[in-house]
Amino acid sequence: MPFRHPDRTHDLSTRIAMEVRERLEEAVDFVCLEALVQERRQRGLPPPAADNNADRREYQANVSAFLTMLERELTTDLTADQRERLGATTVGPRDGETRHVTTQVALARLLPDYWQRFDAVRARYLGAAASERGTVTDDSGREGRGLLARLFGRG
Image (cartoon, rainbow, N blue to C red; front, side, top):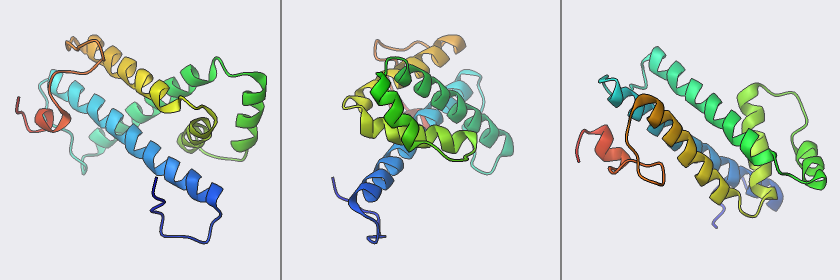
C-alpha cells in the first residue's frame, strides 16, 4: 500500500491513519452518492448536483445515516479489550461526523476483517434503502448496472 500523503513529517502510524481515513472517506462517499442517485432515479428526479443545497443536505443525511449504521453494526460484538482500545483512540471533542469517521478509522485498524464487514453493511444499507423505494436489487444489494451507467442513464 503506497503512502501517498505528501506530508512525510509524520510517523508511520500517523501516515497509515491518514491513508485509512482517505480510503474510508472515499468509500463512504461512494456508498452515499450511490444511495442518493438510486433514490433520485426512483423518484424520477434528475441526478444530484454539487451546487444544489437541497442535494447536499440529502447527501449529508445519507452520510450521517450510513456512518451511524456502520458504527452500530461494527461495535456490537467487540470484546472488552477492543472497546477499551477503540475508546482510547477516539477521545477528544469532535462533531458528530468527525467522531464517526475517527471511530471508523480506529475500527479499520483494529478489526482484521473491517473491509469485508464494511462491504456487508454497505450492501444492507443500499439494499434497505432500495427496498424502501421499491428498487429491485440482486443478492449483494447492488443493482445490475454500474454507478456511471446509472448516472448517465445508460444500461
